[in-house]
Amino acid sequence: MSPPRCAAIIRSKHPIDLDEAMRAVALAAERSSCEVIEAPEKADLCIVLGGDGTILHALRQLADTGVPVFAVNFGTIGFLSAVDRDQLEPGLDRAFAGDFETVSLPCLEATVGSERRIAFNDVTVSRQPHAPVAEVAYRLAGEEVGRVRCDGLVAATPAGSTGYNLANGGPVLAWGVEGYAVSFISPHTLTARALVAAPGDVLHVRNTASRGPVEVAFDGAREAELAEGEEIEVRFRDGAGQLAQLPGSTFYRRMREKFGRLAQ
Image 1: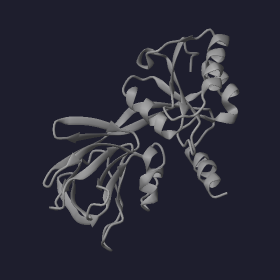
Image 2: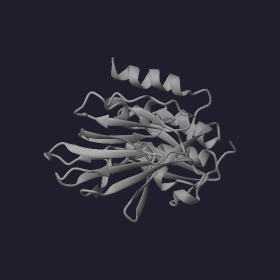
Image 3: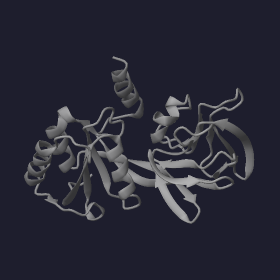
């Protein structure tokens, strides 16, 4: 990649001390004669300081702009990050030198009523806290696949397949796989099985129970509800985000390093 001429910073909103990291970004940009601006969508590069939630926020904000997101992990796992915090300064130098590759990430585009939102990790339909078990019917490519009593349903991109979907026992999809996973949260049946949907297969999920509304979350943020009889439409869309990674980084090495760390 060519060295960026201007860059923006998106930082975590959690109460963690990032002042030193912000100074490190400013110094690295100065060494590279790169201007730091406030509008990420107008930048050549976006530096993210935070965990996966902050990275996902940046990807959504910069969807379809082509701006690469170079993330330094200040969270717990940082599966989407380019470097960890202990590699902050050398990582920034490589970012401002253009010494990185980009991975094109798909998103899920969801329509609830007249509202349209996107998610780079997952779209989740789930029962509300303390509410009875939900019941959802789901269709793929126009065909009803099943009706499941469960705590919820998760549709996940390959990048998001290592999140909530993985915790459900759903399939892990390597980056580059075209398609998305559909899995269930605590299904109350022996027949509900996770599956991988083709990229062109549109998913519809309907709240079929009379037990009240269910919640809809995008990348973990609850932003909508489905009343009885209402449904959500979810579509796979390729190439919506650009994630910066150091040369030589692979999905499988990331799996070993990030999840192996949690088992230590």
